Length: 210
Image 1 (cartoon, helix red, strand yellow):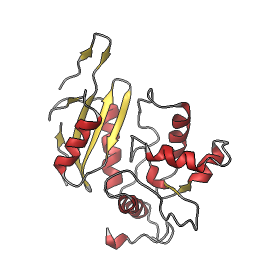
Image 2 (image 1 turned 90 degrees about the vertical axis):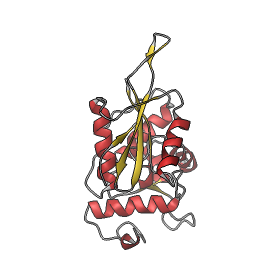
Image 3 (image 1 turned 120 degrees about the horizontal axis):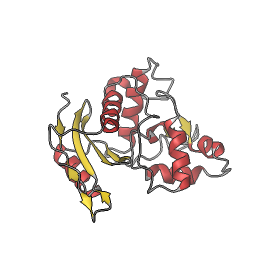
Image 4 (image 1 turned 90 degrees about the horizontal axis):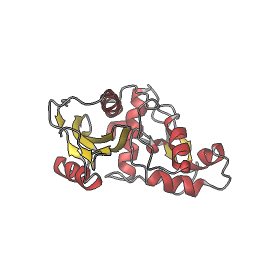
């Protein structure tokens, strides 16, 4: 699929801070979106059921943001984020840990958790409990799962790589993007393909289905 941008210029809000901007762009899995401030990416959007619904969702999530017009210059960190999302959607290698995020609205726990999640290598997974243990939060798996469910940066913060413990009846766990666990499985399948894994190395994901 092409790489066209759907999405003006930054403006000052009360003369203090620039308004957000957003754009929508084509990827191999559909129309995705990014919103940003002068500090970094404030949110990303995976495809909804239709292109129109993706655009609507971006406007709902970022009601004060200006839509970037095709041909507008965008910051290098936005171009970087867009390239990462396109690569992930195309089953190509991508490193998300360096994408610049605006974390000012996050709690200290979310910042620490999302940093850990971005360090999970492409094609690998971790359990909610494993991340909780790394954060020195014994018994904190539920808190990790809840925070991942509120992740505004998917797939840049790859919450799809965080799963329930092996053997759990929860399967792949929840996923807040359109399609839920099916979309989560699809992203994991794409990552398995990008890293040359057998499907069995990530569980029962049927690559041919996607």
